[in-house]
Amino acid sequence: MSDRLPTPGPALPRLRDAFLAAGFTPDGLLELLGAPAYAALARNETVPALRATRGGGRLETLVRLFLLQRPVPYERARSALPADDALTDGWLRRHTAADADAGGSGDAVSATVDVRPYAGPEGLNWWIVSDLGCAVGGAGGIRTAEGAGTGAADRSQLVLGVGGASTTLAGITVRTPVARALDLGTGSGVQALHAARHAESVTATDLNPRALRLTRLTLALSGAPEADLREGSLFEPVEGEAPYDLIVSNPPFVISPRAADGTRLTYRDGGMGGDDLCRTLVERSAAHLADGGYCQLLANWRHMEGRDWSERLASWVPEGCDAWIVQREVQDVAQYAELWLRDAGEHLGDPAVYAAHYDAWLEEFEAGGTTGVGFGWITLRKSGARHPSVTVEEWPHPVEQPLGEEVRAHFERRDFLRAADDAALLATRFVLADEVAQEQIGRPGADDPEYVVLRQNRGMRRATRVDTVGAGFAGVCDGSLPAGRILDAIAQLLGEDPVGLRDRTPESIRLLVEQGFLLPAGNA
Picture 1 (cartoon, rainbow, N blue to C red):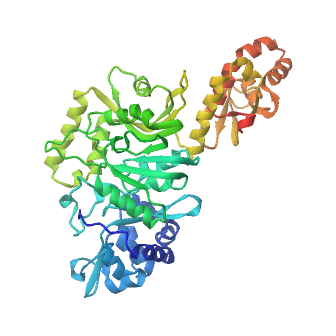
Picture 2: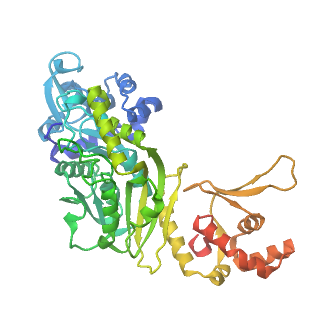
Picture 3: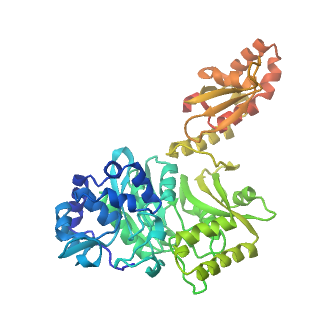
């Protein structure tokens, strides 16, 4: 990894114009490479993309330079972008074509950073700038600026590009307009770039000064406003300042053992034991949130022998904050160790060293009583409620991104339920959420179903089992009648006591509202 990074000089706007003119955009890449080669890049498999970029056109040249890190002849680069300015500002470096597969003779150039096209909202074309090898395949695919193999690269200050974690966090973030946003641990600036669309001011922090330099390039190349960039750990760079309406963080959440030589990968290893970094972020966030503000982050957490993981995470939530914590996946300790050893490319090195490091991970987990590791999302909202709503759930099923609006609606529904007693609930008019389907489960030919399931086709895509009353109630909720009147009609239809039905049904209504199947008519 070279210390040299480009400067946001005169070449930058011309470089952006060249990218757009050549179609170096997400849509352009998909059209050029085709879906199989495009998907292979995410797996750090570059052969299909190399085959698709043999034509020598402008887009092929840019893909080879900035995504595949292959040198190209200088004249070919000059036909695709302002090469001389890019050399001056440090986006490209010059060497001889004999160094690699540039072909022919004479000068060749190669990229000093990864640049990955990224689809912003409303059709915007953005570009994420990261260290070489980190726009494709993550750290395991890193190449040094000199073209050295994986084993020669220094990863301690590595800055990754956009990946699955980045896009997940961007998708779940609440995007209501705000005055102040904080991207804590900004990395290559993906979250700061999104926040710049709906925040009047954005502060981006990172312990790694290299990350701040790359964030500045990402924002500038994508045409976004400048952010207030600050170096430091956790909330240290913003202590004592005005609170934020939105805090987002894709922190270094990996639960990893301390290296024998004291080194760590700053993009993933937080330097604290176990899941203490994520816990600290959650516990300290309330002091930096404005009233009504959100803190949203990705996290890993330990599953510990003899302890309920959900109760443990609920204990992290600071006073005065509502929370929604979703566990998306759980890995056993062996799977988890293998994932992050491969992430660092250790499986490609000395097998004895790999085995020793693998053993160190397992030893750390055993000593701490860790039986597995959970992956998921944590969202806090500073509600100031005397009785906060804290939801901790496991949801490993497919969801529909983006989910930011569903996250906002979740807390809005919680506000409604907290304020509404049973009488108020029965006086409320509800509407059935969009794209909810009913499934009847039972034996073929039976007169009545064994049970009925309501299923969402949007958002969290939940499914919930309901009885005949619940199904009938949900089916007629169109906002025209209060819930109590609907129950009275159902009671008359079924020959039941309306008072008894009113007494026992509010709990079921609350569950349907909580999960987003029913919405108060004013919130629909």
